[in-house]
Amino acid sequence: MNEQHLSKRLQKVVSYLPEGTRLADIGSDHAYLPCYAVLNGQASYAIAGEVVEGPFQSAKKQVEKLQLAEQIHVRKGDGLSVLTAEDQIDTIVIAGMGGSLIRSILEKDPSKLAGVKRLVLQPNLAAHKLRSWAETNQFALIAEAILMEDQKIYEILVLEKTEQPVHYTEKECFFGPFLLAEKNEAFRAKWLHEKENWQKIIQTIEEKSGAHAENQPKLKELTHKIQLVEDVIV
Ligand code: SAM
Image (cartoon, rainbow, N blue to C red; front, top):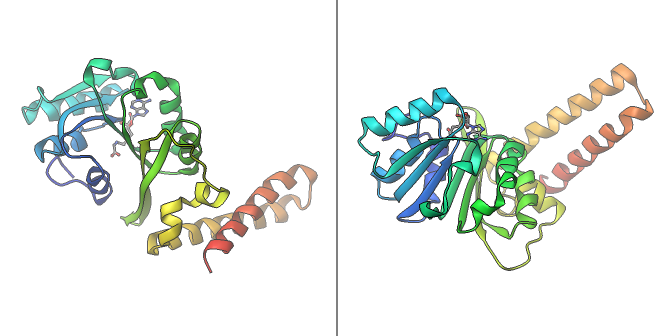
């Protein structure tokens, strides 16, 4: 992968950027995504934010090598703290992290989202935490994608600022309203795999410690999640 050839996952993320956007890529690693977006005219300006020194240096080198330092500013810092009002960022990408971490980045400094119109989020797990965050933060899902690359399955959530109330049912929050409507191959593979895992965990708990009261909440939660999967995948 490089700034010319992104992974299938990041290519899909880029496809959701509005034309000529002012982009922030938080957790930018090598800055491949903002470089690609600027080189292809999808972003007119970008901030690549990175909290760890090594990836921050890699991102800086990459931007300098491509002589894109005027359009792409690489900044070191935690989450949205690297953004200023003057940047006039309208789209934020946060990709390749867990849903809980992405949610904590969004929650840490909500004022930084003031002018932001679109979020393109790619959680590696626990996407439901972002859908429930959206419900209480005036963002609504406008699209979702799920795809397989190198035997891994990735979900992408695209959210836009809204003034309307946002509510997702338990199943919509868990599976994703757009993904649920489509139920493509990757979706089925992901949830059947999760279901098998949960079944194995239940079996292990029951074999090891049987029907101890302290196990009941966990067993109940896993059984409920298995039921949700069985309800949507027949
Ligand atoms: N976004 C790229 C992608 O999707 O390929 C890189 C993903 S990499 C697995 C996650 C990156 O996010 C790492 O470089 C890590 O240092 C950075 N990161 C983690 N927490 C962060 C935070 N709070 N603020 C900024 N960057 C963060």
